[in-house]
Length: 336
Ligand SMILES: [Zn+2]
Image 1: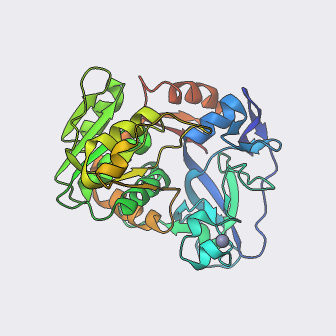
Image 2: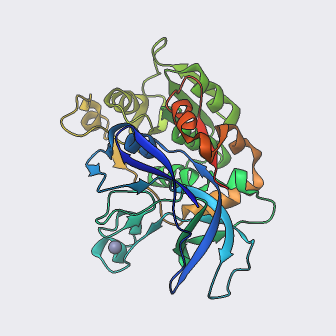
């Protein structure tokens, strides 16, 4: 079978690998679609994502869906359409016992060098995962749309960290794929206003299509201060965080979901004190993938986030398009 393997920075190969066999409690999935994430792009460009450095050749991909190929337990019939929860936690560390398996200290995540040994990903024609990672698709949801379940889970978790957004004014700084999905999820959950900011017209166009009530090109116009109940920072930039903090009302909440650069950052934090603003982080997700699948099955807006689809053999071209935020939002690979 073919697999997309990164060997080092700028060394990405489509390789032939043996079809894996499922062990006990595992199932083999014929992969159909995989979304390219910012972390896939970082492994490709830099051979690392922040402090997570490649430990050897890594099959990329954690936003993946497919059909059951072989389930030795007999629970899932061959051909069953499934999304894959990319994480599994140990369910016994203090974080897990406190109900936060997304921050499990022993977590493993598909296509990630965060664990030791690293965890191979799902950009391949077949992948073996644990039975409890499978999420059969709800009625009416096709695989080419279900591929958004993982990033939408991230977006929903970020909103969960902000509290109930119904009737509230929400700002989303950075309207790339995750930001656009936060916009869409906030609108779907009943936010009164959703303002999206970005430096790219393409990103703001997608944000508008999925439910932004206002879009702001931050290099051309200011973001109103003290004008939002909640801000979700999805750009991963210190300037975005400064904007988010300035934009919320007294007592407002800012959630950081975009990955920030390591090291010291220059961020305007003064209002955190004088306006008693709450600043929270959001990392991956827990069960939000189930709500994501329900939303994807019942609300058409999310489809606008997928702007390009390429066959697996064209992964290099797909990566180039995904690296150009002036052209693309979510780029999807057809895996088999
Ligand atoms: Zn744990």
